[in-house]
Length: 227
Image (cartoon, rainbow, N blue to C red; front, side, top):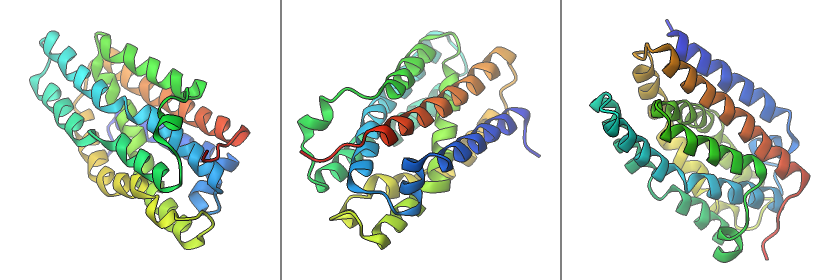
């Protein structure tokens, strides 16, 4: 039986999947019909938010230690920080395979939704409930488990994007890793009992859902092309 917090998080995952299925850019990514511009836009925005994942997790571990709060949770954050290290390079390597230049990606401002995602998570790890970041981790890892591998397989099969077979490392890498992560997170989160902490975790998942959908709304409005 699902704990109340895991049930609430899974409801956010379901809402996210439904919203993405209704978005033309996200739908194209998942069904393999994405064009080069849409995929480059997706990877570019992904690069910008993923490069904050390792430092945010590491900072959350530091905050828990500063608060002298549950060493086992701080250890979980330290472990996840190491697991996520370098994943932004996966996205950049895929962009390079598609003909993009590092400077054009790295120095491009992320869309407002990604900026909001980064700002929210920076606030949260500095708060008195840095465990809230686990809500972000849960919803994104659940999304990868549900869609990342399928998206990679379908885009490669369609062959609509030049060199696509060498540009799906990020999607495949996350799909392989995140299934076990979701189960482990759910088990850990089931033990959280503080109402304020639960609120922060669920709010984090909700903000992540909204900003992730917002990211795809920006992508649908204007996709990028390699320079």
